[in-house]
Amino acid sequence: MQHPLPRIAIIGTGIAGLACAAQLHAHAAVSLFDKSRGLGGRMATRRSEVARFDHGVSRFSADGDFEVFLQPLIAAGSVAAWSPKTVRLSPQAGINQPRYAALPPRRQWVASPGMSSLGRAVVAQYQFDAVHLGVTVSALETQPDQRMRLLADGQVYEDFDRVIIAMPPAQAAALLPHGAMRQACESVVMQPCHTLMLAAPTPTEVAWDIALVDDPMVEIVIANHQKPGRDGSSAFVVQTNHQWSAQHIDQPVADVGQLIQARLFELFADSLAIEPLRDPESIAYQSCHRWLYAAAATPLQNPQGFLFDAASGLGVAGDWCLGTRVRHGFASGTALGAAVKKSL
Ligand SMILES: Cc1cc2nc3c(=O)[nH]c(=O)nc-3n(C[C@H](O)[C@H](O)[C@H](O)COP(=O)(O)OP(=O)(O)OC[C@H]3O[C@@H](n4cnc5c(N)ncnc54)[C@H](O)[C@@H]3O)c2cc1C
Image 1 (cartoon, rainbow, N blue to C red):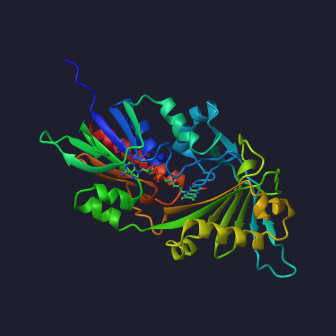
Image 2 (image 1 turned 120 degrees about the vertical axis):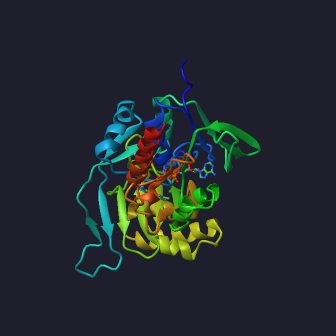
Image 3 (image 1 turned 180 degrees about the vertical axis):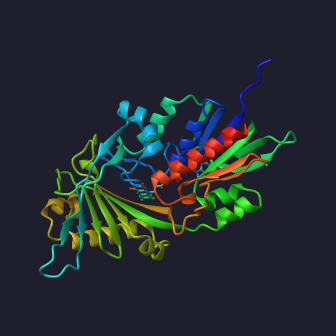
């Protein structure tokens, strides 16, 4: 008699959950859950009437297994290489020093036409049992037969042999029973940041694609519309420094957006290209987003890159297990997927 495939729930469809799902799809009936209406987690895209903005991840690096994972997505046109023209802006530069210094180009990757396209491409690429979006998992329970069930928005999803929690550590801890895994999650503190999205009604081409800024408030500015495969001719994304955002975490997000916008114009006072954005009347789109869990202050750095308890069948993955970047989320989810596969 043929045994049915083991059933696995993966909660969180950021890169860590997606990488884990890709490892397991051929060995189990995999169900994906995410509280958001879209896939990708912090690989996110805001759509507006004038342009799309990647308001989380702007670009990512990949090598080894990650590059192999990307190949079918590149072939399908959902991921593209990008070597952004990057400058470092030093507002305090002395009179004989350049304010803008060009940095050497490095090949990076973007999902296309928006960063959130990567999640959709992964789901199209692999065979999953179910994809539940807009579903917030609030609790896990062990059934009398030792399998697990998820409680979510008044619904019960039953009979899972393994459950993977792929999300920031505070959110993961809230789903875990007391014990070593939960303690490990609670030991990692995530730092916030704010993202301002701005668009002008007229084209705003700038000489750089990314500006890294030496400033206590503004960390990086991205000319989002200059990435491959983007529509719209003006879409700027401005991200803040973690410490600055922590100090402004309780302020209304719209007020924080105004502060960032004002600082942007002080910093880029000499750049006529962004002039159309200066007049509040002529701004076509302005919105600010607060990320409570942007990056780990100190990642977990356990040698495995994930947490897994074979006895209960519970596993945890996320960028914060190894670092703060997309490639760390991929490595964590992939390594956990391999460990879970062995345990089946
Ligand atoms: C503003 C910003 C800019 C960044 N820029 C870069 C960059 O340029 N390059 C780079 O490499 N990295 C960047 N990063 C870091 C990068 O976003 C992360 O390293 C990576 O995306 C983390 O992926 P993850 O799968 O671990 O977690 P996430 O992407 O956070 O995924 C977690 C998922 O879990 C879901 N979830 C949480 N709780 C529940 C629940 N109870 N029920 C159901 N679903 C739930 C969430 O909705 C989310 O989709 C940036 C991050 C931010 C915030």
